[in-house]
Amino acid sequence: MNVFKKLFNKKKFIYDERLVDVPFLKKLKPRELGLFNRMIYKRNFKKGEIIFKKDYPNVVLYFLMKGTVQILLNNEKSIVISELEPYSFFGELGMYIDTKRSASVVSKTDTELYAVSKDEFKHFVDTFPKIGVKILYALGQNMSKDIIKSNERLKECESKLKDKMSNDRYIQN
Amino acid sequence: MIDTSKINYPRVAFYFLIISLFILGIIFYQSIFAYVLSSLFFAYLLNPIVFSLEKAHVPRIIGIGIVYFFIIGIIIGIALFVIPPLIKQANELVNTISVYVKNIDSIQQKIPYIDKVTDFFNSLQAKFPFLTFQKDLANFGSKILDQVHNLPSILFDFVKNLVSIVALLVTIPIVGFFILNDKEKFMKAFFAFVPNKYFELTVLLMRKLDNVAGTYLRALMIEISIVSVLSSIALVIVGVPYALLIGIIAGFANAIPYFGPSIGVILAIVSVIINSQPMSIAVYAIIGLYLVQAIDNNIVYPIVIGKNTEMHPLIIMLTVIAGGYAWGVLGMFLSVPIVFLVKEIMIVLYKNLKDFEII
Image (cartoon, rainbow over all chains, first blue to last red; front, side, top):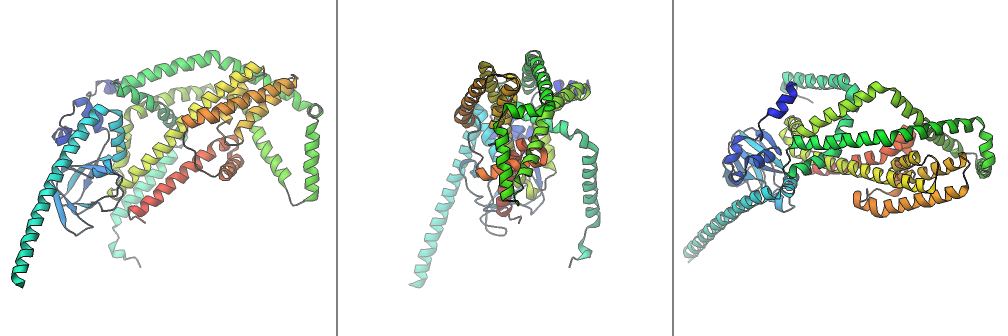
């Protein structure tokens, strides 16, 4: 009888409390978080371990729960585009377009990641559209912020380049 | 040369221990594999219903309860209304067949063409001695026929063997319940064993397996049910003896590509002949089953299974024959889906092993 007691008495919605801290899951209710939690696979990576490489198939979306990861433009020891802190996510491009990984990701410290299969995520959004809208909206917000950030960086680069070019011309003259 | 100084002996020993435990586990649990597989099959069929109830805010455990309640209802219905006439028909059929097997000559007298067909094959054999197809055909035919003949007795053994039925009836829903309720927990436990390097590849493969096997199994069950019901109705209307039994067999046989649909027709004709009914009934039965086929091919199959299996007809045919040789009727039934599943998985595996730079 113990099994049945366990089945019926268990907490109604089981999820990792830390999920509430993930920005785009903030608006979800306990039931919705419980449903979302089912899709999560916990992965631990050691310092320096490659999470995925550029041009690998886009299969999984990751949430960073602990540690720091580096996003690299190319493979292994290339330019670091950015570093991500806990409760951010990466690998979300595959959700929207059918492409290969656009960058490599390496764990800078020992990290704990939550992995969600792209297909399961899509299926989840299809089946629970109300929850899906909340998540997709927050994802879109996040991506918009990223675009604004990269635009600003591009502007910076442009002005630096202009300065350098005018300097070079000055030296030539 | 392998540098022996670099071998991590404790690790090797640990892996060896794990592999040994795995093999021992398989040996220890082998007798319940059939139960677990059946339960998986059972859970697979019900999962979409439980999931759609969950979508409508019905907690999963209650959703499973509702589905189980309906299934029990259906089982009671089948036990009350379908099984008694089915057993009666099977019983009668066995009696009729055994009478006819005793005086096999009278069948040849009733069907004069059988002699001519045999003569034709004999003359072919005489002209081309290297052809052994007559023997092969006879072997193949007798293998299949054996199983068809055994079908009623298998059914009886089944009924006799009450213990295993009870075990099956009790185990499958209970194991199925836990699979339905804790599917994600099992998946998480499985993935915890997968190294990071192979994680994404395994996610992909599991998804493919789930997709192909799940879709195919559910579609197959729906198609079998519809064709069984339609064939039974058609045969009852026409007035073929043992209509229900033949209809159900035709529904299952229909899942065997190319050869399947004709099994129902052959059984209907045989039933008409051995019961000394007018041949016109056989003709109507052929027309009726043909109509069922037309409905299946043009309406049921495109809706339920949709996409074609994308295998060359010749390969499908040869696979069915090979399946028949290997495991008889069951082999004919399962060979194409299994080969299709393996083919699909291998394509995904090969492509992604390259993409993930594993090979």
